[in-house]
Length: 151
Image 1 (spheres, rainbow, N blue to C red):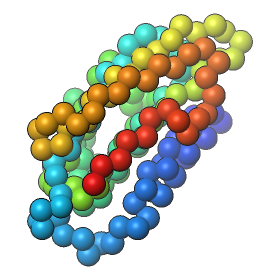
Image 2: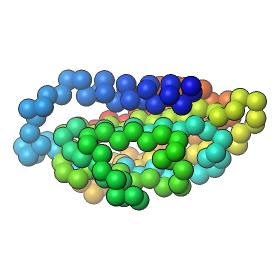
Image 3: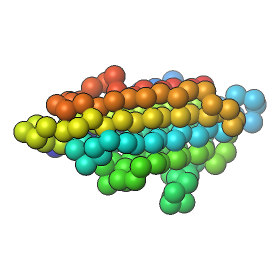
Image 4: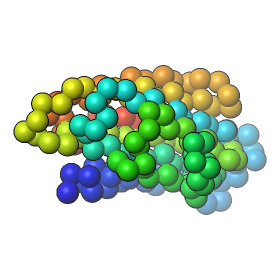
């Protein structure tokens, strides 16, 4: 239940961020960019239920580790976030790019060591942000975990 709640919440945040976008936007007019997000995980990965949503309006995304292609939005749940590193890159220019993610404590009755996410976003090959998010024992669903938006 926790897993479904966090995934739906994060997906809603990303989709609301793109509500004002039109399908008529043209990424060839100088507005678009090639984006890449890299998530480095460390600490107690198994103690948390994790979700990451990456949305690229106007472009497909490819997961570097697996070659899997997503049509505009990649929703990665706990099963897809088992590795220490996840990298998603737009295949073409994206008009807008958003990254949302979070984690909740898997078992409230077990003390869990912290888990750390280091998230790096590049735009046209240049780093635009490097954010570190720490998840502590007892962590619940929150809108403040990871919310990045670029246009």
